[in-house]
Length: 139
Image 1 (tube, rainbow, N blue to C red):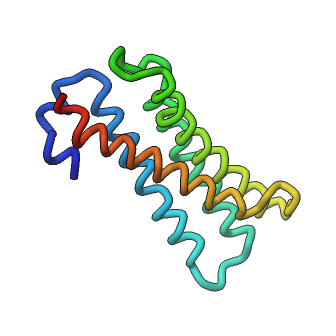
Image 2: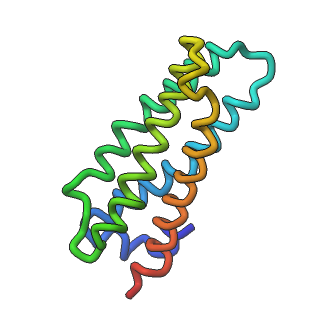
């Protein structure tokens, strides 16, 4: 929604389209994870493979979008670290750890307990980015 309202302004600023893409990935990934979790009758290792594939798909993309060169001079360091880096890393690594623990049958690694933390931080990061794209970008 924020992208469609402020599209011209977003496209005119460097690194802001990447922030919009990051927000979209952070908000949509938990939905795909929920679909994988709610699929009835699948084996634990199958769910682990799905989570690992999702993590492998979003991890490198989020790493590029939240990379060091993507921080603008207007964005405070703490904001970039908490919102851009932390939410991206926790989502990717959390889903990867959950997937690996299910595939390898290692309950000591945490299993599905990584998913709520990953999803919550992803949504917080995505909502913060959406707020910036909707309101703060107009300042």
